[in-house]
Length: 405
Image (cartoon, rainbow, N blue to C red; front, side, top):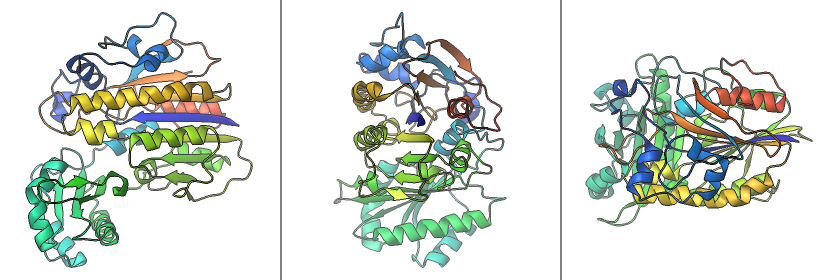
Protein backbone atom coordinates (compact mmCIF):
# COMPACT_ATOMS: atom_id res chain seq x y z
CA UNK A 1 0.00 0.00 0.00
CA UNK A 2 1.31 3.44 -0.96
CA UNK A 3 1.11 5.86 1.97
CA UNK A 4 1.76 9.52 2.68
CA UNK A 5 2.29 10.77 6.23
CA UNK A 6 1.94 14.47 7.02
CA UNK A 7 3.12 15.60 10.46
CA UNK A 8 2.07 19.18 11.15
CA UNK A 9 4.01 20.79 14.00
CA UNK A 10 1.41 23.40 14.86
CA UNK A 11 2.74 26.97 14.95
CA UNK A 12 6.33 26.19 13.87
CA UNK A 13 6.97 29.22 11.66
CA UNK A 14 10.31 29.80 9.93
CA UNK A 15 10.46 33.55 9.32
CA UNK A 16 8.08 36.45 8.70
CA UNK A 17 6.40 36.65 5.31
CA UNK A 18 6.76 39.90 3.32
CA UNK A 19 3.16 40.86 4.15
CA UNK A 20 3.46 40.11 7.89
CA UNK A 21 2.86 43.76 8.85
CA UNK A 22 -0.56 43.58 7.21
CA UNK A 23 -1.42 40.93 9.82
CA UNK A 24 0.00 42.91 12.74
CA UNK A 25 3.32 41.04 12.92
CA UNK A 26 6.87 42.37 13.03
CA UNK A 27 9.57 41.34 10.51
CA UNK A 28 11.61 39.74 13.33
CA UNK A 29 9.04 36.96 13.74
CA UNK A 30 10.74 33.59 13.34
CA UNK A 31 9.30 30.97 15.65
CA UNK A 32 11.90 28.27 15.01
CA UNK A 33 15.03 30.44 15.06
CA UNK A 34 13.88 32.60 17.99
CA UNK A 35 12.88 29.62 20.15
CA UNK A 36 16.26 28.02 19.43
CA UNK A 37 18.17 31.19 20.32
CA UNK A 38 16.28 32.08 23.50
CA UNK A 39 16.28 28.51 24.79
CA UNK A 40 20.05 28.30 24.47
CA UNK A 41 19.97 25.94 21.49
CA UNK A 42 17.75 23.04 20.47
CA UNK A 43 18.69 19.36 20.71
CA UNK A 44 17.04 17.87 17.61
CA UNK A 45 19.38 15.15 16.31
CA UNK A 46 16.78 13.45 14.11
CA UNK A 47 15.44 16.64 12.54
CA UNK A 48 19.07 17.65 12.04
CA UNK A 49 19.75 14.40 10.14
CA UNK A 50 16.69 15.05 7.99
CA UNK A 51 18.05 18.49 7.06
CA UNK A 52 16.25 21.02 9.27
CA UNK A 53 19.52 22.85 9.94
CA UNK A 54 20.02 23.32 6.19
CA UNK A 55 16.94 25.55 5.97
CA UNK A 56 18.43 28.43 7.97
CA UNK A 57 20.60 29.12 10.98
CA UNK A 58 19.08 27.38 14.01
CA UNK A 59 21.06 27.43 17.25
CA UNK A 60 21.89 23.84 18.25
CA UNK A 61 20.82 22.36 14.88
CA UNK A 62 23.76 22.08 12.48
CA UNK A 63 23.53 21.96 8.68
CA UNK A 64 23.95 18.42 7.37
CA UNK A 65 26.28 17.68 4.45
CA UNK A 66 24.19 14.70 3.35
CA UNK A 67 20.66 15.19 4.75
CA UNK A 68 18.22 12.30 4.62
CA UNK A 69 15.30 14.45 3.46
CA UNK A 70 14.63 17.17 0.94
CA UNK A 71 14.37 20.49 2.78
CA UNK A 72 13.01 23.97 2.26
CA UNK A 73 10.37 26.48 3.30
CA UNK A 74 6.89 27.29 2.04
CA UNK A 75 5.06 30.61 1.88
CA UNK A 76 1.36 30.83 2.63
CA UNK A 77 -0.59 31.97 -0.41
CA UNK A 78 -3.94 32.10 1.37
CA UNK A 79 -5.18 35.19 3.15
CA UNK A 80 -4.77 34.48 6.87
CA UNK A 81 -2.56 32.95 9.52
CA UNK A 82 -4.81 30.51 11.33
CA UNK A 83 -5.00 26.74 11.69
CA UNK A 84 -7.83 26.13 9.25
CA UNK A 85 -6.36 28.31 6.50
CA UNK A 86 -2.95 26.64 6.83
CA UNK A 87 -4.28 23.07 6.85
CA UNK A 88 -6.66 23.72 3.97
CA UNK A 89 -3.79 25.07 1.88
CA UNK A 90 -1.64 22.04 2.76
CA UNK A 91 -4.53 19.95 1.41
CA UNK A 92 -4.71 22.04 -1.77
CA UNK A 93 -7.42 24.59 -0.98
CA UNK A 94 -6.16 28.18 -1.24
CA UNK A 95 -8.32 30.76 0.52
CA UNK A 96 -8.67 34.00 -1.45
CA UNK A 97 -10.81 35.93 1.04
CA UNK A 98 -9.73 35.99 4.70
CA UNK A 99 -12.07 34.91 7.47
CA UNK A 100 -13.43 37.79 9.52
CA UNK A 101 -11.78 38.78 12.80
CA UNK A 102 -13.22 40.68 15.76
CA UNK A 103 -10.65 42.92 17.49
CA UNK A 104 -13.45 44.62 19.45
CA UNK A 105 -15.51 41.52 20.22
CA UNK A 106 -18.66 40.23 18.53
CA UNK A 107 -21.60 42.56 17.75
CA UNK A 108 -24.60 42.66 20.08
CA UNK A 109 -26.86 41.17 17.40
CA UNK A 110 -24.81 37.96 17.36
CA UNK A 111 -24.36 37.79 21.14
CA UNK A 112 -28.03 38.49 21.89
CA UNK A 113 -29.17 35.85 19.41
CA UNK A 114 -26.70 33.38 20.91
CA UNK A 115 -28.12 34.04 24.40
CA UNK A 116 -31.67 33.65 23.10
CA UNK A 117 -31.04 30.36 21.27
CA UNK A 118 -28.98 28.74 24.02
CA UNK A 119 -30.99 30.02 26.98
CA UNK A 120 -27.68 30.54 28.79
CA UNK A 121 -28.95 33.67 30.57
CA UNK A 122 -26.08 35.92 29.51
CA UNK A 123 -22.39 35.77 28.71
CA UNK A 124 -19.08 36.97 30.14
CA UNK A 125 -16.15 38.48 28.27
CA UNK A 126 -16.67 39.09 24.53
CA UNK A 127 -13.24 40.52 23.82
CA UNK A 128 -9.89 39.29 22.44
CA UNK A 129 -7.90 37.47 25.09
CA UNK A 130 -5.43 34.73 25.88
CA UNK A 131 -7.31 31.56 26.77
CA UNK A 132 -5.48 31.02 30.04
CA UNK A 133 -5.78 34.69 31.02
CA UNK A 134 -9.50 34.91 30.34
CA UNK A 135 -10.42 31.91 32.50
CA UNK A 136 -8.22 33.31 35.26
CA UNK A 137 -9.99 36.68 35.00
CA UNK A 138 -13.57 35.44 34.61
CA UNK A 139 -13.49 31.86 35.90
CA UNK A 140 -14.83 32.65 39.37
CA UNK A 141 -17.77 34.66 38.04
CA UNK A 142 -18.50 31.95 35.47
CA UNK A 143 -18.57 29.21 38.14
CA UNK A 144 -20.86 31.38 40.26
CA UNK A 145 -23.32 32.33 37.48
CA UNK A 146 -22.97 29.53 34.91
CA UNK A 147 -22.71 32.14 32.15
CA UNK A 148 -20.31 31.04 29.37
CA UNK A 149 -17.09 32.95 28.76
CA UNK A 150 -16.93 34.07 25.14
CA UNK A 151 -13.71 35.45 23.70
CA UNK A 152 -11.78 35.74 20.47
CA UNK A 153 -8.22 36.48 19.31
CA UNK A 154 -6.40 37.88 16.29
CA UNK A 155 -7.69 34.77 14.49
CA UNK A 156 -11.21 34.22 13.26
CA UNK A 157 -12.49 32.31 16.29
CA UNK A 158 -15.60 32.34 18.47
CA UNK A 159 -14.37 30.59 21.62
CA UNK A 160 -16.60 29.41 24.45
CA UNK A 161 -14.98 28.50 27.77
CA UNK A 162 -16.91 26.69 30.51
CA UNK A 163 -15.94 24.89 33.70
CA UNK A 164 -17.01 21.26 33.41
CA UNK A 165 -18.69 21.33 36.84
CA UNK A 166 -20.65 24.49 36.03
CA UNK A 167 -21.60 23.53 32.48
CA UNK A 168 -21.44 19.84 31.48
CA UNK A 169 -19.50 19.03 28.32
CA UNK A 170 -22.56 17.98 26.36
CA UNK A 171 -24.15 21.40 26.99
CA UNK A 172 -20.95 23.26 26.04
CA UNK A 173 -20.77 21.28 22.81
CA UNK A 174 -24.44 22.01 22.08
CA UNK A 175 -23.85 25.74 22.64
CA UNK A 176 -20.94 25.57 20.19
CA UNK A 177 -23.15 23.87 17.61
CA UNK A 178 -25.73 26.63 18.06
CA UNK A 179 -23.04 29.30 17.63
CA UNK A 180 -21.80 27.58 14.48
CA UNK A 181 -25.33 27.46 13.05
CA UNK A 182 -25.89 31.13 13.91
CA UNK A 183 -22.66 32.24 12.25
CA UNK A 184 -23.33 30.06 9.19
CA UNK A 185 -26.72 31.72 8.79
CA UNK A 186 -24.99 35.11 8.78
CA UNK A 187 -21.94 33.99 6.79
CA UNK A 188 -21.96 36.92 4.37
CA UNK A 189 -21.45 39.37 7.23
CA UNK A 190 -19.88 37.08 9.85
CA UNK A 191 -17.61 34.64 8.03
CA UNK A 192 -16.07 33.16 11.19
CA UNK A 193 -13.63 30.32 10.68
CA UNK A 194 -13.99 28.32 13.90
CA UNK A 195 -16.16 28.00 16.97
CA UNK A 196 -14.05 26.36 19.67
CA UNK A 197 -15.22 24.59 22.83
CA UNK A 198 -12.72 25.37 25.61
CA UNK A 199 -13.64 23.31 28.68
CA UNK A 200 -11.63 23.80 31.86
CA UNK A 201 -11.43 22.41 35.38
CA UNK A 202 -9.89 23.17 38.77
CA UNK A 203 -10.47 25.74 41.49
CA UNK A 204 -10.10 29.49 41.80
CA UNK A 205 -6.54 30.52 41.03
CA UNK A 206 -5.63 27.13 39.50
CA UNK A 207 -8.02 26.72 36.58
CA UNK A 208 -6.68 24.48 33.82
CA UNK A 209 -7.95 23.89 30.30
CA UNK A 210 -8.79 20.30 29.32
CA UNK A 211 -7.00 19.78 26.00
CA UNK A 212 -8.48 16.37 25.24
CA UNK A 213 -12.05 17.70 25.48
CA UNK A 214 -11.50 20.69 23.20
CA UNK A 215 -13.61 20.61 20.03
CA UNK A 216 -13.37 22.81 16.92
CA UNK A 217 -16.47 23.57 14.85
CA UNK A 218 -15.07 24.84 11.56
CA UNK A 219 -16.70 26.05 8.39
CA UNK A 220 -16.81 23.35 5.75
CA UNK A 221 -14.10 23.36 3.07
CA UNK A 222 -15.36 25.34 0.07
CA UNK A 223 -14.15 22.77 -2.44
CA UNK A 224 -12.66 19.27 -2.62
CA UNK A 225 -9.17 18.70 -1.19
CA UNK A 226 -6.59 15.97 -1.56
CA UNK A 227 -8.39 14.19 1.31
CA UNK A 228 -11.54 13.87 -0.81
CA UNK A 229 -9.52 12.67 -3.79
CA UNK A 230 -7.91 9.90 -1.72
CA UNK A 231 -11.25 8.80 -0.27
CA UNK A 232 -12.85 8.74 -3.73
CA UNK A 233 -9.99 6.58 -4.98
CA UNK A 234 -10.77 3.89 -2.38
CA UNK A 235 -8.09 5.08 0.02
CA UNK A 236 -8.06 5.72 3.75
CA UNK A 237 -7.56 9.14 5.31
CA UNK A 238 -6.63 8.88 8.99
CA UNK A 239 -6.97 12.19 10.85
CA UNK A 240 -5.07 12.31 14.14
CA UNK A 241 -5.61 15.21 16.56
CA UNK A 242 -7.88 18.02 15.40
CA UNK A 243 -7.67 17.14 11.67
CA UNK A 244 -11.24 15.81 11.70
CA UNK A 245 -12.54 19.12 13.10
CA UNK A 246 -10.50 21.30 10.72
CA UNK A 247 -11.99 19.56 7.68
CA UNK A 248 -15.43 19.02 9.26
CA UNK A 249 -15.06 15.28 8.51
CA UNK A 250 -14.85 16.00 4.74
CA UNK A 251 -12.62 13.36 3.17
CA UNK A 252 -11.90 11.69 6.53
CA UNK A 253 -12.40 7.93 6.74
CA UNK A 254 -10.88 7.39 10.21
CA UNK A 255 -10.34 9.89 13.04
CA UNK A 256 -9.03 9.96 16.57
CA UNK A 257 -8.72 12.98 18.86
CA UNK A 258 -5.71 13.47 21.11
CA UNK A 259 -5.01 15.19 24.43
CA UNK A 260 -1.29 15.76 23.90
CA UNK A 261 1.53 15.54 21.38
CA UNK A 262 2.77 12.40 23.10
CA UNK A 263 -0.57 10.73 22.47
CA UNK A 264 -0.58 11.92 18.86
CA UNK A 265 2.94 10.62 18.27
CA UNK A 266 2.11 7.26 19.82
CA UNK A 267 -0.89 7.04 17.51
CA UNK A 268 1.31 7.92 14.53
CA UNK A 269 3.49 4.92 15.38
CA UNK A 270 0.43 2.68 15.64
CA UNK A 271 -0.93 3.99 12.33
CA UNK A 272 2.39 3.30 10.61
CA UNK A 273 2.29 -0.22 12.04
CA UNK A 274 -1.34 -0.63 10.86
CA UNK A 275 -2.32 -1.13 14.48
CA UNK A 276 -5.08 1.42 15.09
CA UNK A 277 -8.03 -0.95 14.85
CA UNK A 278 -8.19 -1.65 18.57
CA UNK A 279 -8.07 1.99 19.69
CA UNK A 280 -11.00 2.74 21.98
CA UNK A 281 -11.71 6.23 20.64
CA UNK A 282 -11.11 5.56 16.95
CA UNK A 283 -14.00 6.84 14.82
CA UNK A 284 -14.62 5.01 11.55
CA UNK A 285 -16.68 7.02 9.07
CA UNK A 286 -16.06 4.80 6.07
CA UNK A 287 -14.79 1.25 5.95
CA UNK A 288 -12.42 0.78 3.02
CA UNK A 289 -11.84 -2.81 1.94
CA UNK A 290 -8.30 -3.53 0.80
CA UNK A 291 -7.19 0.10 0.36
CA UNK A 292 -4.28 0.61 -2.00
CA UNK A 293 -3.47 4.15 -0.87
CA UNK A 294 -3.56 5.93 2.47
CA UNK A 295 -2.90 9.32 4.08
CA UNK A 296 -2.00 9.67 7.76
CA UNK A 297 -2.60 13.35 8.62
CA UNK A 298 -1.41 14.26 12.12
CA UNK A 299 -1.64 17.64 13.88
CA UNK A 300 0.70 18.10 16.86
CA UNK A 301 -0.90 21.03 18.67
CA UNK A 302 1.05 21.44 21.93
CA UNK A 303 3.71 23.70 20.40
CA UNK A 304 0.98 26.18 19.47
CA UNK A 305 -1.73 25.77 22.10
CA UNK A 306 0.33 25.17 25.24
CA UNK A 307 3.50 27.11 24.49
CA UNK A 308 3.28 29.49 21.53
CA UNK A 309 0.15 31.24 22.72
CA UNK A 310 1.49 31.37 26.29
CA UNK A 311 4.89 32.84 25.36
CA UNK A 312 6.57 29.78 26.86
CA UNK A 313 9.89 29.46 25.04
CA UNK A 314 11.25 26.62 27.17
CA UNK A 315 8.01 24.65 26.83
CA UNK A 316 8.04 25.14 23.06
CA UNK A 317 11.65 23.92 22.88
CA UNK A 318 10.87 20.88 25.03
CA UNK A 319 7.89 20.01 22.81
CA UNK A 320 10.10 20.12 19.72
CA UNK A 321 12.62 17.85 21.42
CA UNK A 322 9.84 15.41 22.34
CA UNK A 323 8.73 15.28 18.69
CA UNK A 324 12.35 14.72 17.64
CA UNK A 325 12.71 11.81 20.05
CA UNK A 326 9.73 10.07 18.40
CA UNK A 327 11.22 10.58 14.95
CA UNK A 328 13.90 8.10 16.00
CA UNK A 329 11.11 5.50 16.03
CA UNK A 330 9.12 6.90 13.09
CA UNK A 331 11.92 7.19 10.51
CA UNK A 332 12.77 3.44 10.47
CA UNK A 333 9.08 2.67 9.77
CA UNK A 334 9.12 4.67 6.52
CA UNK A 335 9.36 2.06 3.76
CA UNK A 336 9.93 2.41 0.02
CA UNK A 337 6.15 2.86 -0.34
CA UNK A 338 5.88 5.67 2.22
CA UNK A 339 6.42 9.41 1.96
CA UNK A 340 6.93 11.36 5.20
CA UNK A 341 6.30 15.12 5.12
CA UNK A 342 7.03 17.26 8.18
CA UNK A 343 5.77 20.84 8.11
CA UNK A 344 3.70 23.48 9.95
CA UNK A 345 0.51 25.48 9.38
CA UNK A 346 1.57 29.01 10.48
CA UNK A 347 3.82 30.68 13.03
CA UNK A 348 3.21 31.27 16.74
CA UNK A 349 6.37 33.01 17.91
CA UNK A 350 6.44 32.97 21.73
CA UNK A 351 9.31 35.47 21.82
CA UNK A 352 7.45 38.47 20.38
CA UNK A 353 4.86 40.77 21.91
CA UNK A 354 1.35 39.31 22.01
CA UNK A 355 -0.06 35.80 22.19
CA UNK A 356 -1.47 35.35 18.68
CA UNK A 357 -0.37 33.44 15.60
CA UNK A 358 2.31 35.04 13.44
CA UNK A 359 2.28 35.33 9.65
CA UNK A 360 5.30 33.22 8.69
CA UNK A 361 6.59 30.82 6.11
CA UNK A 362 6.97 27.26 7.40
CA UNK A 363 9.64 24.55 7.14
CA UNK A 364 9.09 21.47 5.01
CA UNK A 365 10.99 18.17 5.06
CA UNK A 366 10.19 15.36 2.62
CA UNK A 367 11.60 11.89 3.32
CA UNK A 368 11.65 8.51 1.66
CA UNK A 369 14.69 6.23 2.08
CA UNK A 370 14.92 5.71 -1.70
CA UNK A 371 14.50 9.35 -2.81
CA UNK A 372 17.47 11.61 -3.36
CA UNK A 373 17.44 14.55 -0.94
CA UNK A 374 17.50 18.02 -2.49
CA UNK A 375 17.22 21.68 -1.57
CA UNK A 376 13.60 22.64 -2.22
CA UNK A 377 14.27 26.34 -1.74
CA UNK A 378 11.41 28.69 -0.87
CA UNK A 379 8.12 27.43 -2.25
CA UNK A 380 5.27 29.74 -3.21
CA UNK A 381 2.45 27.84 -1.51
CA UNK A 382 1.69 25.18 1.10
CA UNK A 383 -0.41 23.55 -1.64
CA UNK A 384 2.77 21.99 -3.04
CA UNK A 385 2.19 19.30 -0.42
CA UNK A 386 -1.20 18.35 -1.89
CA UNK A 387 0.26 17.97 -5.37
CA UNK A 388 3.19 15.98 -3.95
CA UNK A 389 0.85 13.59 -2.16
CA UNK A 390 -1.28 13.16 -5.28
CA UNK A 391 1.84 12.38 -7.34
CA UNK A 392 3.10 9.90 -4.74
CA UNK A 393 -0.26 8.12 -4.54
CA UNK A 394 -0.77 8.34 -8.30
CA UNK A 395 -4.12 10.12 -8.21
CA UNK A 396 -5.37 13.32 -9.80
CA UNK A 397 -5.42 16.62 -7.92
CA UNK A 398 -6.74 19.98 -9.11
CA UNK A 399 -4.00 22.11 -7.66
CA UNK A 400 -1.96 25.17 -8.63
CA UNK A 401 1.12 24.04 -6.69
CA UNK A 402 4.24 22.17 -7.75
CA UNK A 403 5.51 18.79 -6.64
CA UNK A 404 8.22 18.54 -3.97
CA UNK A 405 9.48 15.21 -5.40
